[in-house]
Amino acid sequence: MNSAHCCQRARRAKGVAGWLLPSTVLVLLPKCPLCLAAYVALGTGFMMTPASAHLLLRTLTLLCIAMLTFCAMKWITKYFRQKPSYNLQLKSTHR
Image (cartoon, rainbow, N blue to C red; front, side, top):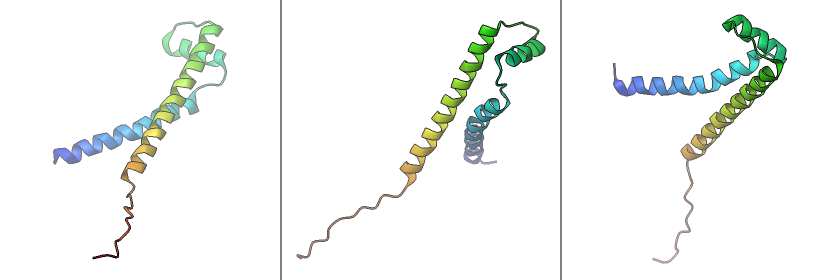
């Protein structure tokens, strides 16, 4: 197997995960802080106060939105860097 091909595949998978992970978290994140506290209690056995659950909910939401914004900006800059530039120059009529 060609190592350059393998690295390109890994880079592409990392890029897809950069979009997929925060999107999935945002979709599956409960909208109610008390539901988040219940999920944490079911998953880990630790109880959370409603205030800490609210803070965790807002923090996770902001982190996911920041990550999606970062991925979008990275994609936009990559798109504009690869876009061909047209070098328009005036041709001189004198020889």
